[in-house]
Image: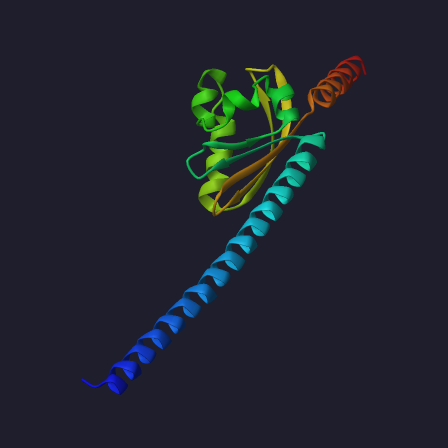
Length: 173
């Protein structure tokens, strides 16, 4: 092999190395840009999640969400108060197992129907565990169930008093 051939081979090899290095640098820049975009997207997702959590904690309704297996994935502050159950005790636990001693299957039946049928169910039910009446809206989805509820015990008791008064009035008349 002559000197000219060796020089051409060397130039070709160096050119190939330079192109490989440039390609690696281009890929590194693209990877860095992708990583920066992912960091931005994660930060934006975290910001939206925090904003949603703030909203859900400010509403006057109790709210919780469970997955398809009834495992609690969210529990707001009002739910803590109304159901006397702390978020940290509920998160990651099966809702029905946590309230197995409640003595009422009605909540369970309604929730299972909403999940199974991917439907919305509105109902009022008495909780023996809390000794309160709740108005409940349960929204089934492909991911599980979202439940909004409020204490309507005062209203139910007032309705009972009105009914009793009406019965007494009818019995007198």
